[in-house]
Image 1 (spheres, one colour):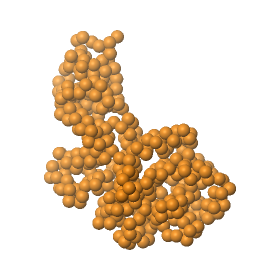
Image 2 (tube, rainbow, N blue to C red):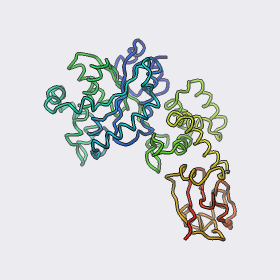
Image 3 (tube, rainbow, N blue to C red):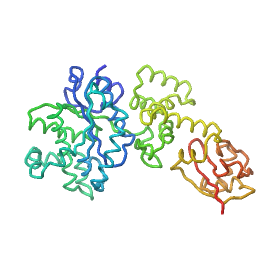
Image 4 (cartoon, rainbow, N blue to C red):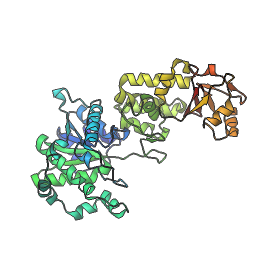
Length: 422
């Protein structure tokens, strides 16, 4: 299967310029996607364009990952409600270094036969003079055309407006495409659907300046079946950096995928073939309570980002926490697994604490009546074991290492209660 067909059956072609299908069926091309270092890590939303490059590489094309050390100093205004805070050069350079490492988990930049490149657009943008930029790039764009772009129009019509700095961003990205066209014969840019205006601007620049033909293909921007923005949780973004989002949290994000999204995400975020995905889809229909698709999804994506060790860590913690044997995990392990969940402390009491009172004081429930109701209905677990008697008293010796209670409310909401000595 060619690259267009591969992306199409997975539901990943949102739009493409005329001729892309025939081009990818006929030729091996150089294709690029850009990643601006506006944060110290990429997040799960970036996996789609990264995997598009990885799929291209597996099918014999030459991928280029552009880390925007230059454009990251400006910030892309596309569909942003307000202007980004400008980062310092030092912050951008530190982010670039981290993102290089993350991209290397998906793409083979080392073997010569892989024909993959990792470049930083600061190499050419940082030395581009203002006069040169306005003469050689700016003169090929009309303000009218730029104002007509949906992403710019929204900001112009908002109270915030748009600064000249961010207004210039599409020109900088267009110049990236021109440089890559000149240096590496790059004729295809891939990005999210919010990048369509920036991509077509680059194609126009190549046509005007070089008389060449370039192409664009954009991927869908994701919303969950529940109507929420993909990749966001109560704790914030789900990062690819294991220090910002632990492998267990990362694994749980995918494991908790809505049934309505699970098969779609298997197509989007894994290399599993159509036969295997169809098998998982049928298993999900036959045994929805087993969450076959979600488990495979969590395992595959966690392996891509954190390796086999990350999968083992996440599944070990999951088995212990949801299988009822928290004793297998130490306090250090539990704190590493749950760095962002709600937590509280309670003073040491030799005789322990009434469960209803502890749940309320720790903020697990909003009232004693709610705590009582949840306990009676079997909706409260302490250190992996369900409690059903509202008169239960939790003793210090039943805490993990005498220091920590892991309280789960319902299927997914976890809380930490640490015992402190006065």
